[in-house]
Length: 308
Image (cartoon, rainbow, N blue to C red; front, side, top):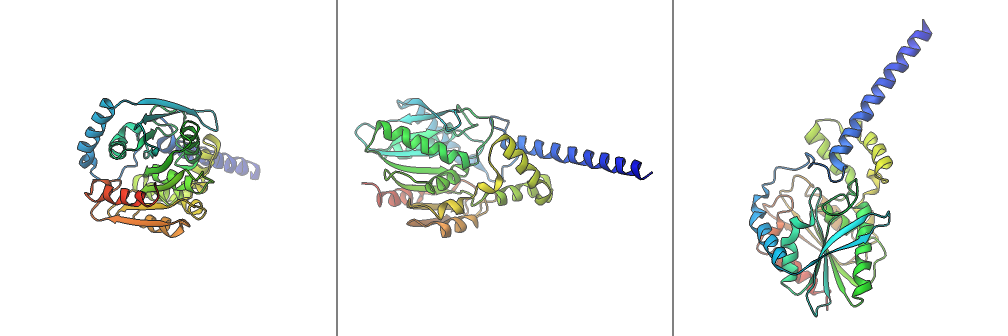
Protein backbone atom coordinates (compact mmCIF):
# COMPACT_ATOMS: atom_id res chain seq x y z
CA UNK A 1 0.00 0.00 0.00
CA UNK A 2 2.81 2.40 0.94
CA UNK A 3 4.57 1.52 -2.28
CA UNK A 4 1.45 2.36 -4.30
CA UNK A 5 1.07 5.68 -2.47
CA UNK A 6 4.70 6.52 -3.14
CA UNK A 7 4.35 5.73 -6.85
CA UNK A 8 1.16 7.79 -7.01
CA UNK A 9 2.82 10.73 -5.24
CA UNK A 10 5.84 10.60 -7.52
CA UNK A 11 3.56 10.46 -10.56
CA UNK A 12 1.58 13.44 -9.33
CA UNK A 13 4.78 15.36 -8.65
CA UNK A 14 6.09 14.54 -12.11
CA UNK A 15 2.81 15.73 -13.63
CA UNK A 16 2.92 19.01 -11.73
CA UNK A 17 6.58 19.51 -12.70
CA UNK A 18 5.86 18.92 -16.39
CA UNK A 19 2.92 21.33 -16.28
CA UNK A 20 4.99 23.94 -14.45
CA UNK A 21 7.92 23.86 -16.85
CA UNK A 22 5.55 23.77 -19.85
CA UNK A 23 4.05 27.02 -18.53
CA UNK A 24 7.50 28.53 -18.05
CA UNK A 25 8.51 27.45 -21.55
CA UNK A 26 5.38 29.08 -22.96
CA UNK A 27 6.07 32.31 -21.10
CA UNK A 28 9.68 32.28 -22.32
CA UNK A 29 8.51 31.82 -25.91
CA UNK A 30 6.01 34.64 -25.56
CA UNK A 31 8.43 37.09 -23.97
CA UNK A 32 11.96 36.24 -25.11
CA UNK A 33 11.69 34.28 -28.33
CA UNK A 34 13.42 36.31 -31.04
CA UNK A 35 11.63 37.13 -34.31
CA UNK A 36 8.40 35.92 -32.73
CA UNK A 37 5.02 37.61 -32.94
CA UNK A 38 4.87 40.63 -30.60
CA UNK A 39 4.44 39.55 -27.01
CA UNK A 40 1.59 40.84 -24.88
CA UNK A 41 3.77 43.14 -22.83
CA UNK A 42 2.74 46.60 -23.96
CA UNK A 43 1.33 49.11 -21.51
CA UNK A 44 -1.64 51.37 -22.17
CA UNK A 45 0.44 54.18 -23.67
CA UNK A 46 -1.03 55.68 -26.84
CA UNK A 47 1.87 55.44 -29.27
CA UNK A 48 -0.12 57.11 -32.06
CA UNK A 49 1.45 60.41 -30.99
CA UNK A 50 4.69 59.11 -32.51
CA UNK A 51 3.14 58.31 -35.88
CA UNK A 52 3.96 61.58 -37.64
CA UNK A 53 7.51 61.53 -36.34
CA UNK A 54 7.99 57.93 -37.43
CA UNK A 55 6.60 58.76 -40.86
CA UNK A 56 9.06 61.64 -41.17
CA UNK A 57 11.85 59.31 -40.08
CA UNK A 58 10.84 56.74 -42.68
CA UNK A 59 10.84 59.37 -45.43
CA UNK A 60 14.27 60.54 -44.26
CA UNK A 61 15.67 57.00 -44.39
CA UNK A 62 14.19 56.37 -47.83
CA UNK A 63 15.58 59.61 -49.27
CA UNK A 64 18.97 59.70 -47.55
CA UNK A 65 21.88 57.65 -48.83
CA UNK A 66 22.77 54.88 -46.41
CA UNK A 67 24.15 51.36 -46.23
CA UNK A 68 23.18 48.25 -44.32
CA UNK A 69 26.30 47.08 -42.52
CA UNK A 70 26.99 43.87 -40.62
CA UNK A 71 29.13 42.58 -37.79
CA UNK A 72 29.65 39.17 -36.22
CA UNK A 73 28.73 38.90 -32.54
CA UNK A 74 30.74 37.14 -29.83
CA UNK A 75 28.57 34.06 -30.43
CA UNK A 76 28.80 34.26 -34.24
CA UNK A 77 25.45 35.88 -35.06
CA UNK A 78 25.21 38.15 -38.07
CA UNK A 79 23.98 41.50 -36.75
CA UNK A 80 22.74 44.33 -38.97
CA UNK A 81 22.75 48.10 -38.73
CA UNK A 82 21.70 51.06 -40.88
CA UNK A 83 24.57 53.49 -41.43
CA UNK A 84 24.06 57.11 -42.54
CA UNK A 85 27.28 59.02 -43.16
CA UNK A 86 27.70 62.76 -42.72
CA UNK A 87 30.79 63.65 -44.81
CA UNK A 88 33.53 65.47 -42.96
CA UNK A 89 32.11 64.81 -39.49
CA UNK A 90 33.75 62.72 -36.79
CA UNK A 91 30.62 62.82 -34.61
CA UNK A 92 28.82 59.48 -34.34
CA UNK A 93 25.75 58.13 -32.60
CA UNK A 94 24.86 54.48 -32.10
CA UNK A 95 21.08 54.18 -31.64
CA UNK A 96 19.59 51.11 -29.95
CA UNK A 97 15.86 50.39 -30.28
CA UNK A 98 13.51 48.95 -27.70
CA UNK A 99 11.95 45.58 -26.95
CA UNK A 100 10.16 43.86 -29.87
CA UNK A 101 11.03 46.83 -32.07
CA UNK A 102 13.45 47.34 -34.96
CA UNK A 103 15.91 49.92 -36.23
CA UNK A 104 13.34 51.16 -38.76
CA UNK A 105 11.02 52.20 -35.94
CA UNK A 106 13.58 54.66 -34.55
CA UNK A 107 14.62 56.28 -37.83
CA UNK A 108 13.06 59.50 -36.49
CA UNK A 109 15.67 59.57 -33.74
CA UNK A 110 18.41 59.02 -36.30
CA UNK A 111 17.12 61.95 -38.33
CA UNK A 112 17.49 64.29 -35.35
CA UNK A 113 21.16 63.39 -34.99
CA UNK A 114 21.85 63.41 -38.74
CA UNK A 115 20.32 66.89 -39.08
CA UNK A 116 22.88 68.05 -36.49
CA UNK A 117 25.86 66.71 -38.41
CA UNK A 118 26.21 63.25 -36.87
CA UNK A 119 27.08 60.03 -38.61
CA UNK A 120 24.28 57.70 -37.57
CA UNK A 121 24.36 53.94 -36.93
CA UNK A 122 20.99 52.47 -36.00
CA UNK A 123 21.35 48.83 -35.04
CA UNK A 124 18.96 45.89 -35.09
CA UNK A 125 19.41 44.05 -31.80
CA UNK A 126 19.86 40.28 -31.83
CA UNK A 127 16.55 38.54 -32.45
CA UNK A 128 15.09 41.66 -34.08
CA UNK A 129 14.80 43.08 -37.58
CA UNK A 130 17.55 42.01 -39.98
CA UNK A 131 19.78 40.60 -37.25
CA UNK A 132 20.13 36.92 -36.50
CA UNK A 133 19.32 35.36 -33.17
CA UNK A 134 16.51 33.22 -31.79
CA UNK A 135 16.20 34.98 -28.44
CA UNK A 136 15.99 38.53 -27.12
CA UNK A 137 19.02 39.64 -25.11
CA UNK A 138 17.18 42.20 -22.93
CA UNK A 139 20.32 44.33 -23.01
CA UNK A 140 22.69 41.84 -21.40
CA UNK A 141 24.19 40.15 -24.43
CA UNK A 142 23.31 43.26 -26.45
CA UNK A 143 25.84 45.28 -24.43
CA UNK A 144 28.57 43.09 -25.90
CA UNK A 145 27.06 43.61 -29.35
CA UNK A 146 27.21 47.39 -28.90
CA UNK A 147 30.88 47.06 -27.98
CA UNK A 148 31.36 45.22 -31.29
CA UNK A 149 29.60 48.08 -33.10
CA UNK A 150 31.93 50.57 -31.40
CA UNK A 151 34.87 48.51 -32.60
CA UNK A 152 33.35 48.41 -36.10
CA UNK A 153 33.26 52.23 -36.22
CA UNK A 154 36.73 52.77 -34.78
CA UNK A 155 38.41 50.34 -37.17
CA UNK A 156 37.21 52.57 -40.02
CA UNK A 157 37.04 55.96 -38.32
CA UNK A 158 39.64 56.02 -35.51
CA UNK A 159 38.98 59.66 -34.62
CA UNK A 160 35.25 59.10 -34.15
CA UNK A 161 33.54 60.67 -31.13
CA UNK A 162 30.72 58.31 -30.26
CA UNK A 163 27.46 58.94 -28.41
CA UNK A 164 25.37 55.97 -27.26
CA UNK A 165 21.60 56.49 -27.37
CA UNK A 166 18.95 53.95 -26.42
CA UNK A 167 15.22 53.71 -25.74
CA UNK A 168 13.61 51.26 -23.28
CA UNK A 169 15.44 47.93 -23.71
CA UNK A 170 17.92 49.89 -25.84
CA UNK A 171 18.39 52.29 -22.94
CA UNK A 172 19.12 49.38 -20.60
CA UNK A 173 21.56 48.11 -23.21
CA UNK A 174 23.33 51.46 -23.33
CA UNK A 175 23.53 51.71 -19.53
CA UNK A 176 24.95 48.21 -19.21
CA UNK A 177 27.44 48.96 -21.99
CA UNK A 178 28.77 51.92 -20.01
CA UNK A 179 29.73 49.52 -17.23
CA UNK A 180 32.29 47.90 -19.52
CA UNK A 181 35.81 49.10 -20.34
CA UNK A 182 35.07 51.47 -23.22
CA UNK A 183 37.50 53.43 -25.39
CA UNK A 184 37.77 57.17 -24.76
CA UNK A 185 36.06 57.71 -28.12
CA UNK A 186 32.75 56.99 -26.37
CA UNK A 187 32.09 60.47 -25.02
CA UNK A 188 28.63 60.15 -23.42
CA UNK A 189 25.40 58.19 -23.30
CA UNK A 190 21.68 59.01 -23.41
CA UNK A 191 19.21 56.56 -21.88
CA UNK A 192 15.46 57.05 -22.29
CA UNK A 193 13.12 54.98 -20.06
CA UNK A 194 15.46 52.07 -19.38
CA UNK A 195 14.83 49.59 -16.58
CA UNK A 196 17.05 49.15 -13.55
CA UNK A 197 16.78 45.35 -13.43
CA UNK A 198 14.94 42.68 -15.37
CA UNK A 199 13.57 40.80 -12.37
CA UNK A 200 11.32 43.67 -11.27
CA UNK A 201 10.12 44.36 -14.83
CA UNK A 202 9.24 40.71 -15.37
CA UNK A 203 7.55 40.48 -11.98
CA UNK A 204 5.44 43.55 -12.73
CA UNK A 205 4.37 42.29 -16.16
CA UNK A 206 3.60 38.77 -14.95
CA UNK A 207 1.22 40.22 -12.37
CA UNK A 208 -0.41 42.58 -14.90
CA UNK A 209 -0.70 40.26 -17.88
CA UNK A 210 -0.97 36.75 -16.47
CA UNK A 211 -2.33 37.44 -12.98
CA UNK A 212 0.20 35.06 -11.49
CA UNK A 213 2.34 35.53 -8.39
CA UNK A 214 5.77 36.29 -9.94
CA UNK A 215 7.74 34.19 -7.49
CA UNK A 216 5.81 31.12 -8.63
CA UNK A 217 7.12 31.24 -12.22
CA UNK A 218 10.25 33.42 -12.34
CA UNK A 219 12.51 30.62 -11.10
CA UNK A 220 11.22 28.34 -13.85
CA UNK A 221 11.54 31.02 -16.53
CA UNK A 222 15.07 31.65 -15.33
CA UNK A 223 15.92 27.96 -15.82
CA UNK A 224 14.57 28.09 -19.38
CA UNK A 225 16.48 31.32 -20.06
CA UNK A 226 19.76 29.85 -18.84
CA UNK A 227 19.25 26.81 -21.05
CA UNK A 228 18.06 28.53 -24.23
CA UNK A 229 19.51 32.04 -24.09
CA UNK A 230 22.62 31.54 -21.98
CA UNK A 231 21.94 34.23 -19.39
CA UNK A 232 19.82 34.62 -16.28
CA UNK A 233 17.25 37.16 -15.12
CA UNK A 234 19.52 38.23 -12.27
CA UNK A 235 22.41 39.12 -14.60
CA UNK A 236 20.37 41.83 -16.31
CA UNK A 237 21.06 44.53 -13.74
CA UNK A 238 21.82 48.03 -14.94
CA UNK A 239 22.55 49.25 -11.41
CA UNK A 240 25.56 46.95 -11.06
CA UNK A 241 26.87 48.13 -14.42
CA UNK A 242 26.26 51.82 -13.74
CA UNK A 243 28.28 51.61 -10.54
CA UNK A 244 31.30 50.87 -12.75
CA UNK A 245 30.49 53.48 -15.40
CA UNK A 246 32.91 56.21 -16.42
CA UNK A 247 30.70 57.46 -19.25
CA UNK A 248 28.74 60.71 -18.67
CA UNK A 249 25.07 59.79 -18.92
CA UNK A 250 21.78 61.64 -19.35
CA UNK A 251 18.80 59.85 -17.78
CA UNK A 252 15.31 60.51 -19.21
CA UNK A 253 11.97 59.05 -18.14
CA UNK A 254 8.28 59.83 -18.57
CA UNK A 255 6.41 60.32 -15.31
CA UNK A 256 3.37 58.38 -16.58
CA UNK A 257 5.34 55.33 -17.72
CA UNK A 258 3.45 52.20 -16.66
CA UNK A 259 5.63 49.69 -18.49
CA UNK A 260 9.04 50.53 -17.05
CA UNK A 261 8.19 52.02 -13.64
CA UNK A 262 9.05 55.71 -13.31
CA UNK A 263 10.88 55.07 -10.04
CA UNK A 264 13.53 53.07 -11.88
CA UNK A 265 15.07 56.21 -13.37
CA UNK A 266 16.07 57.33 -9.87
CA UNK A 267 17.56 53.92 -9.09
CA UNK A 268 19.64 54.17 -12.25
CA UNK A 269 20.62 57.79 -11.73
CA UNK A 270 21.68 57.27 -8.13
CA UNK A 271 23.76 54.21 -9.05
CA UNK A 272 25.70 55.90 -11.85
CA UNK A 273 29.30 56.61 -10.87
CA UNK A 274 29.96 58.88 -13.87
CA UNK A 275 28.97 62.53 -14.44
CA UNK A 276 25.20 62.57 -14.91
CA UNK A 277 22.03 64.57 -15.42
CA UNK A 278 18.36 63.64 -15.21
CA UNK A 279 15.20 64.81 -16.98
CA UNK A 280 11.68 63.64 -16.14
CA UNK A 281 8.82 64.47 -18.48
CA UNK A 282 5.36 65.18 -17.07
CA UNK A 283 2.33 63.52 -18.68
CA UNK A 284 4.56 61.27 -20.78
CA UNK A 285 4.06 57.53 -21.09
CA UNK A 286 6.61 54.91 -22.02
CA UNK A 287 9.08 56.16 -24.65
CA UNK A 288 7.05 59.33 -25.20
CA UNK A 289 9.32 61.88 -23.54
CA UNK A 290 10.79 62.34 -27.02
CA UNK A 291 7.57 64.05 -28.16
CA UNK A 292 8.16 66.97 -25.79
CA UNK A 293 9.39 70.18 -27.51
CA UNK A 294 12.35 70.49 -25.12
CA UNK A 295 13.51 66.89 -25.51
CA UNK A 296 16.21 67.28 -28.14
CA UNK A 297 17.22 70.71 -26.86
CA UNK A 298 18.15 69.02 -23.58
CA UNK A 299 19.72 66.00 -25.29
CA UNK A 300 22.06 68.04 -27.46
CA UNK A 301 22.80 70.52 -24.70
CA UNK A 302 24.08 67.56 -22.68
CA UNK A 303 26.05 66.12 -25.59
CA UNK A 304 27.70 69.48 -26.31
CA UNK A 305 29.41 69.32 -22.92
CA UNK A 306 31.35 66.22 -23.98
CA UNK A 307 31.82 66.32 -27.74
CA UNK A 308 34.48 68.51 -29.35
